[in-house]
Image (tube, rainbow, N blue to C red; front, side):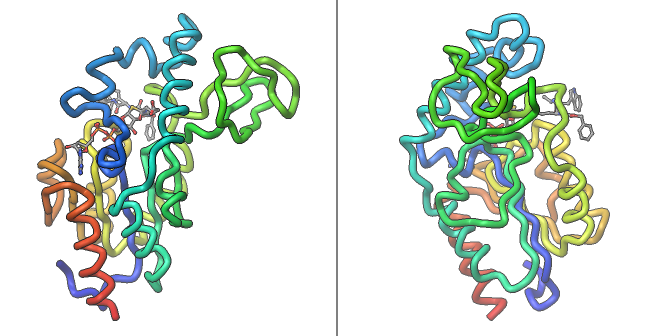
Amino acid sequence: MPVMKDIRNIVILSGAGISAESGIDTFRSEGGLWERHRVEDVATPEAFARDPDLVLRFYDMRRAAIQTKEPNAAHLALARLDAEWPGELLIVTQNVDDLHERAGAERVLHMHGEHLLAWCTACDTRSPWTGTLIERPPCPVCGERALRPDVVWFGEMPYRMDEIYAALREADLFVSIGTSGAVYPAAGFVRNAREMGAHTLELNLEPSKGTRWFEEARHGPATQIVPAWVDEVLSAAS
Ligand code: BJW
């Protein structure tokens, strides 16, 4: 752990592992989503063009499921850090669930989109969405039946990359939580942050694909290791 008085700007990258203990499936763990659904069938623009019903059903199912789940101790600990950390802090999440926000975190950026938004490809607006899309409802803004899940598929550009790279450039501490390090550009953030002088820490159930890039790693369930780390950071800073 670096000396906390030297740390002002924190960037946290979260992934599916932080929501696993809330009962939301990860992608690549045993029994994860990609064991039951082929990525090429449900998470690419080509799949949506080829078989929109299959893709819409997949996302309708997941959108309904996340609304029955609750934030866990790891989301709550990060929300506490967000509320109490006096310096800059940004939670960049790859997750499309809203558990960071429901835990109370405010400085959250969804680089892979959000389940609870629908994107109209006709008028390019995003509307809050809790129901289904399979029946092709009209866009609440323009009335066209051109809504799709507001998520980033393979081959599409993740959201708000300029903001993310700007935060990484200024980061003193970069922490990656519950992500396998299999998907770029997120998997490369640790190297970006390190090149700019940040201390780098991995918090994950097991060593991720990119674990060698981190200066420090702690392994275990997020609901245990994240609250413990947040306690340490806040007490060292006070
Ligand atoms: C726990 C736990 C517990 C479990 N406690 N931990 C060749 C080389 C390099 C790149 C490419 C390449 N070929 C193609 C690419 C690019 C491609 C890519 O990365 N492909 C790879 C497969 C190689 N990337 C893209 O296409 C991206 N766009 C892009 O690159 O644009 C161009 C660009 C260029 C330059 C700069 C910027 C952009 C888009 C990627 C979109 C990803 N979309 C998805 C679906 C989103 C919607 C949805 O939810 O359906 O995003 S895929 C899926 O993977 C989802 C996730 O956000 C993402 C990452 O998954 P995550 O979160 O890491 O989950 P898992 O399951 O992999 O890991 C969970 C971890 O938790 C594990 O390690 C567990 O151990 C751990 N864990 N329980 C703590 N209790």
